[in-house]
Image 1 (spheres, rainbow, N blue to C red):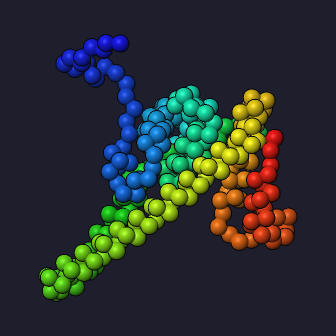
Image 2 (cartoon, one colour; image 1 turned 45 degrees about the horizontal axis):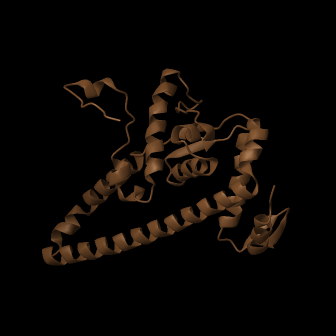
Image 3 (cartoon, rainbow, N blue to C red; image 1 turned 180 degrees about the vertical axis):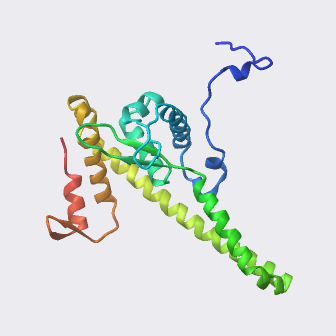
Length: 238
């Protein structure tokens, strides 16, 4: 297949999805997968349609409807990956899904990716203003040494947190894949398409239970060893 070049203003004639640069440049999104970043851009694009159709909740917040099936069609992927991508965006606080039950699709709230940065900037600016006179009185050489040490410590702590979050996410992905396969989710979704949301809630509950770090879990009012509950859940099948 041979494609032609763009000439003049021709590039402006097409529609494009826009992905915020912050998702690629900011440290807090370092472990967010490229596909999840792409999905976020697609969801942002869908928001414009919601605004046009005045899809607002009682608090004036914009919501969209973008189901697991929509993700599958968009990315040409299976249930496991579609579920994982939405879960990933939730883990990073980029979306929030509100389940409605009765076979109705979730409402998806696309969160403002820049809000945290703005709050952090204001916080830092306030701290700088309140501590300005003290900093001016410090010895310049000592100040640079302290700052360098703080930055190094902060970076090490951040890396540890990111590494830990990455491991948790990887573990969740493996559990989601395991339960989707053992419960034959593909078949269940074909047999009960109206219960898609409920089926995924069940899988998420199983994953949450098996991924927890708690030693005890309360089942029907009794505290059970988490390892015992986990073992029983892992034996479930269709």
